[in-house]
Image (cartoon, rainbow, N blue to C red):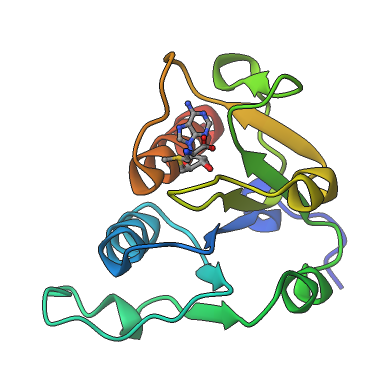
Length: 154
Ligand SMILES: C[S@@+](CC[C@H](N)C(=O)[O-])C[C@H]1O[C@@H](n2cnc3c(N)ncnc32)[C@H](O)[C@@H]1O
């Protein structure tokens, strides 16, 4: 049996939003996540209905998991997979310096209030993007994904 794998075969990521306010942001993030190689996306404490604007039928490409609560989400985080919070926080590492883990779940906050203190404490690491003001949540997720694939390209 094979015991060693190329590191490319031992990596994956998912990305999601806690309490997203608009379904448009979920749809935008879903599309980017699919195109740039995410294995899944998720939302916590929110609902999403299929959109007619989904011309790529992303629902058929990668799954969207809908967790009813933070607890439900935390119970599903896979073995050896880090939760990475994308947030403007004093403790956060600037994305330029951030080394992405092989297996990661990226967590974004709601448009209104960002990530809760509880969720930030559950993240193994927090990452901040450049800029004095916050960007749109789907844009923030797309930047994080782009940074990951750029740094992991060999
Ligand atoms: C519009 S922002 C939330 C702003 C909210 N009013 C606040 O003060 O926390 C929505 C989410 O996008 C992400 N985000 C936006 N700008 C960011 C930045 N510069 N660095 C890291 N995350 C960012 C975070 O996940 C944030 O919770």
